[in-house]
Image 1: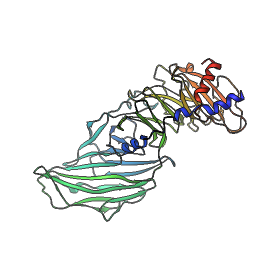
Image 2 (image 1 turned 30 degrees about the vertical axis):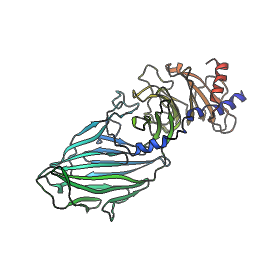
Image 3 (image 1 turned 90 degrees about the horizontal axis):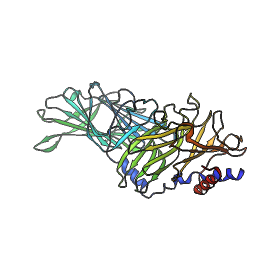
Image 4 (image 1 turned 30 degrees about the horizontal axis):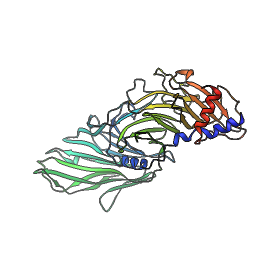
Length: 452
């Protein structure tokens, strides 16, 4: 048995990452970061008072008639730095209307979303709020690194009603170029000097404009002469101008059609799985409550993902025909992590199988592989061997703090039948399941000796 343990310890995971070294993957991800914003409606995945959300790889914008909140995430420190853009005296009850629906789809998978309202969300290029101030409409749009918003002042309306508070841990300062700048721990944020114009004879006629402080952290827009009998457009931009965040990627994979899949953290405990087509255009995003990513493989457009989570709202398929082996955290207080194994179909925004796997104490999956013949999924990782950790055969926990483990799941089965095999491996030291390119040789050995 000792030799089998050694082989397993070398075996499970490189298949999960064999697809990572794709020359254009980073180019596609950079292209995505500079691409147009897509705005999804809030159906409970964000706090109350937020109407629309625009997510990128390392930050997100939370939008309402009262203003916008930028949250910048650092994957290494697991910190979120907020910057708040607040429209003083705005009509908070103004309803937002999504404009220019896109082909991009997003979904949030949560145990608390019993009715599935957060799945397959529409996404829009723009969001319009009417009468945010009397005679003044608000239009949000932009790209994933900057949020533009037009303040459209109707003929005869008073632009002096516009007051903006900019709130962050540090104060904004006015630069010589006329921009508003603040430094945060996770990057610099700039509210650029507004472009202001009127349409005259089908041409943009620019109007002079500058920011001026009207109180602590509050600014107004001082305008030059303009025709009050015509509509006026004030166009500022809130930009993440010099991000210092660490790369948030947990795993990258590519399928035979050159579609790219990236698992990235864009918030504390929030994992997004993106799909891009071969040209680099974003197709979809699925969000999950996860703490770590142990690996990802893709087959026929289906994503197989493993890692760990300590969130009681991590989605398991209790509402699907194929029930999870373990529907909830072993520790209901969420003070420790369990491993998970999930099957995700991005095109349909569907999760046909998802389960926790672990006992009391921290259990973490660090590798994944797929037997494309049988459809069974193999995960490996480490466990403290706490109460409730299930093994189907093999040795008992060997001690030394942690042992490695291997578990085999059949996601086409339901409940207890979906766990085909699991075992500890290790000695009296600290052991863990690690990754190697020899997985399929071990897989054949395992099938020959265990009849799986």
